[in-house]
Length: 92
Image (cartoon, rainbow, N blue to C red; front, side):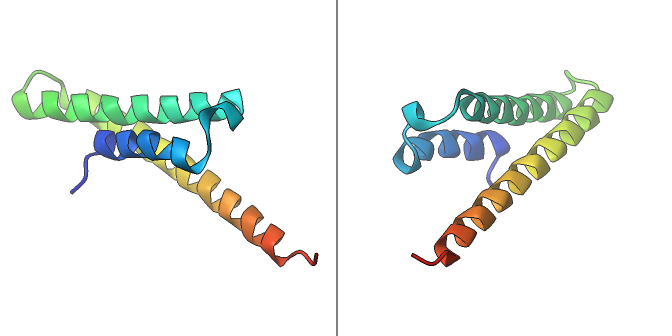
């Protein structure tokens, strides 16, 4: 299974190939950074829970935050794909 941190890192590495960073709105870059931060926090909390350094309650909270962040990212991706498909259907 791919860790959320690894997935976010892979996304950050692939993003310049798809859309150059200078072409992105400031909010998009910040959103990607915030998403990566939330996923990294889950990874840290999970590691801490396995070693006994972190409370299980904190782990559950961070997992819930990560779930919301992932659902938001997927919803945004779906809207972008839908808009792109709509553009492709437009007559020229």
